Length: 153
Image (cartoon, rainbow, N blue to C red; front, side, top):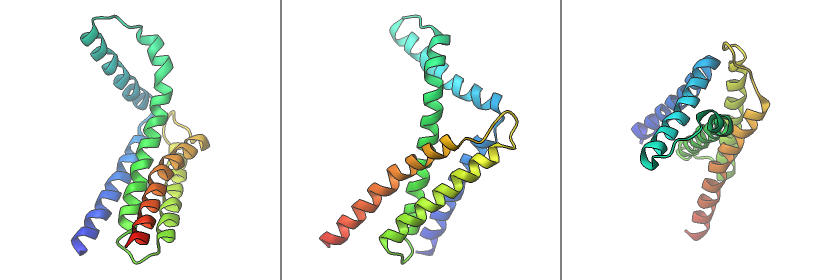
């Protein structure tokens, strides 16, 4: 039991460090990573289909949504990890959900605050909103499933 709890803490801390690492990248590096992902995808489509695609137009259309999807996804997983960890404690389901949401909100706010000190980056309340929606998208279904299981047992 203790080893399981330690593993869950390690998973959570590693994930939080990954989010910190992404946020700590200067704007140029962060943009290059996003652009590189899209360019790799375009290259793959061109190789498979043989059709030449307009890189600049595609980049201008999809980079912003991809960056926001990254926020959503990172915090979706953060919510999963918090719920997994909190399940190990003797807390009511409602407290597990509330604590997971609170921790994700605090981390999202601290993440955007951290970006204020990274070259070329800025903190954005809109990103905190996306982060929280990502967290809620994982936390609430877990809460509902656990409630349902408790009622059927």
